[in-house]
Image 1 (cartoon, rainbow, N blue to C red):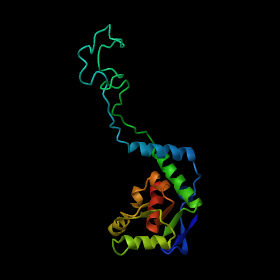
Image 2 (image 1 turned 90 degrees about the vertical axis):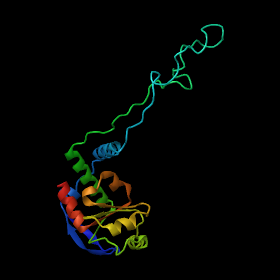
Image 3 (image 1 turned 120 degrees about the horizontal axis):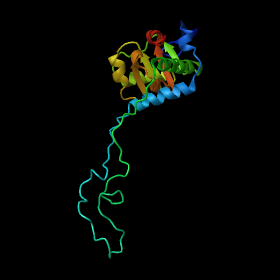
Length: 205
C-alpha cells in the first residue's frame, strides 16, 4: 500500500510504499486492550506494604479489664478496629506483570498503526529536525503541521530535537525501536520519518 508523504509544512510530497501486512492490518480491539493493560501494569512498582496485627507494635497487655467498664471486651490493641492496630487484609509487595507473547505484541502494534493511518492520525515526513535545541523552533514546526499534540518518531537519536521537545506539553520524541502501544494511542497525531517508518516495518514484519 502507498502512504502519502508530507513536508514539515504539512503539504503533500509524494508517497511511500509500505507493507500491507504491517500498516493495513485489521483493528483487533480486544488484543490492543490486553496489550495496553499489560504494558501499563508492567510499569507499576508494586511496592505497597502494610502491617498486619502480628507486625504492629504494642498490644502485649490487655488494654482494660474484662468486665465492669461498659465497653466491648478487648484483649489487645493490635486488632484492626483500633487506631494503632494492624490492617485486616494488609497489602503485600507484588508484581503486576502480565505475560504477553511476542506475536500478540507485534500484532497489537500493527493493529494500532493501521488504525492510526485509517483515522488520518499518522503522517509520514521525509525528516523532522530542528537546527538548534530551541523550543520555539519546534513549536513553529508543529504549528506548520497544524498540531500541538504529537508523538514524533525518528530513526536515530537527535539531541537537538529531544531537548527542544522536553518542555513542550503533549509532545514527545522517541526512536522507532522504542515505540510502545501506550505512546501511540496517547497522542492525537503521530509523525513518523521515512527512515523510522522503514524501521517499524522491519521490526513488526
